[in-house]
Amino acid sequence: MELDLFALLFLAGAGFLAAFLDAIAGGGGLISLPALLSVGIPPIAALATNKMQSVVGTTVAAITYWRRGYIKFKELIVPIILTFVGSLFGAATAKSLDTNFLTLLVPILLIGVSLYFMLSPKMTDDARAERLKFAIFAPVMGFVFGFYDGIFGPGTGSFFIAGFVTLFGLGLTRAVGNTKVLNAISNLAALMFFILGGDVVWLAGGVMIVGQIAGGYLGARTGMCFGAKLIKPLIVVISMAMAIRLLWPIVFPV
Picture: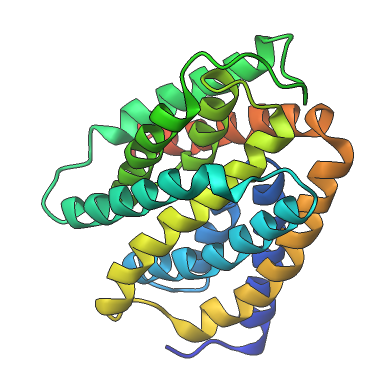
């Protein structure tokens, strides 16, 4: 597929903005996927290319959070493995499962996440007592959300953040850092299926990766600099925006 210089520059900019927001609060796909579709890339190829470029941005963000001490990889080894396996199962299942019911269920869940973060007065960077044992239930969460990401995808980052905060008592910035790790893993597993199917538009993904590297790094640094006072409102806005985006064609069919 041929893309002109303007389209490539546009995609690089979209990759930067998507990674910047995603590194702070998730939801970068709200920008990157429509950008790919807008330059004429077919839906399946756009989904595949979006996975390719987002893997890089989330990885850069994860490394940046790790270098500042917000991630303990030793605690995430089992969740990483289960997230990868869950996403592989999800991607394989997506070919035979009718996922139409998710188009209504997911936005409802995202609205719930948005309202929870909006109304909860305790959303800070301070750690709290865990409600569930991290070593036991974080891998379960990784498998479930990884499976969902392989099947459908939108809102995975928001669900991970909410899980880390509400179930395991992590401070908000640390929750985002851990989310970037597992989100990168789930994207990588799903991407493997798209590569085997020959669906990735490598040139488009390549220029977006340039933007993703810069955006992922600067977004993570911004999130760590401002902490919960920036992350919390962004999660509310992005989760609600994703919900509206998913509900729009249902409420206002063309």
